[in-house]
Image (cartoon, rainbow, N blue to C red; front, top):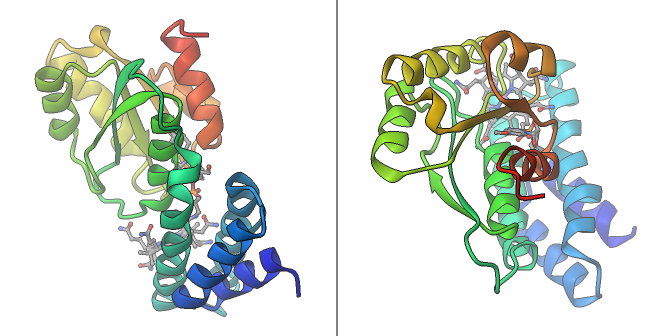
Amino acid sequence: METLEIIRKAIIEGQAKQVEQEVKTALDNGIKASQILYEALIPAMAEVGRLYEEGEYFVPEMLISARAMKAGLGLLKPFLIGSDVKPVGKVAIATVQGDLHDIGKNLVSLMMEGAGFEIVDLGVNAEPEKFVNAVRDQQVNVVAMSALLTTTMTRMKDTIHALQEAGLRDKVKIIIGGAPITQAFADEIGADGYASDASQAVTLTKRLLALS
Ligand code: B1M
């Protein structure tokens, strides 16, 4: 079995140690970090989602696979982030209130960091006030919100409303993303943009800040 397939399988089976070993082997063999990410780690999590939907996996299995994915992502991080990039903007990022999914959010952070943005990571389950405080106290240029649940995506609208109420809406660009999010939803709630994946999030942010 080729290395990428072994990594995919190990994530699906939640074998964090094996994922670490195989990711190291893949890197040693000259496979690019981005290829490992897009051809093994991300498809593996999509498969885990499918297995959950079909009732083969339950929450504990999802959690164990997520840990295995994170183990691999940790090893890829230094290769995905350039070392000589100067900050080009400051981004406050979080998964919105009620939502604990952080892999996509972390991936967006990582890609943003790699493109030269300074990241203020507000974590998961971030209530609107947390974003408001970051914009007020930390001079961020961009608010980036992630949501993976249809039940939590509405918190994005609440956050935008809270920024409006605090008189801070015009000070930042707001981008949103996550599996249930669409451009139509972004338009509906008054976000400045929607990105379907981490690299699109970087492209969008650069465009909104007129950096590209
Ligand atoms: Co959850 N979960 N989960 N889960 N989970 C989903 C999201 C689900 C689709 C599974 C399914 O049914 N197929 C489903 C949501 C259904 C829905 O709302 N429509 C679901 C559910 C139901 C739940 C619970 C409610 C289950 C329960 O308890 N009964 C529960 C909710 C907990 C909570 O948050 N309050 C729950 C819990 C969990 C775990 C904790 C076990 C675990 C998360 C662990 C963690 O993150 N630390 C988990 C996992 C792992 C998943 C799946 C399997 C994988 C998510 C993932 O990490 N994907 C997921 C199924 C799936 O997505 N197919 C599922 C990999 C990651 C790289 O992709 O996060 O989509 P993603 O990020 C992408 C893009 O979306 C985008 O870029 C990334 C790629 O480059 N993106 C952005 C994300 N944020 C962005 C922000 C941007 C731009 C782009 O700009 C700011």
